[in-house]
Image (cartoon, rainbow, N blue to C red):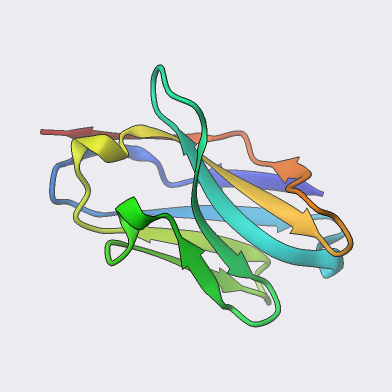
Length: 118
């Protein structure tokens, strides 16, 4: 499985960005896809997860109501719509995939940088 993340960039506070993650390979075994982020000097944190089968989603508290994760099974992509961005959202964002029967996210994209200017 390979994941390719895209969509990062520079945005002003209050603005929006949409990240995309294209999956290829043995995606028929996908259980969940997720977005994580790592800000400078901080540990990586979970942002959002989506069930590949049901579309059910979960979010970390700091992004609830602002971010929306979605997936397109036909295109084998997962997206993260980010609205009302603030400086605390500045980070490298990574998409990840968890396969059926696995306890963790085994596959990761290369990361895409989101910079929010105040």
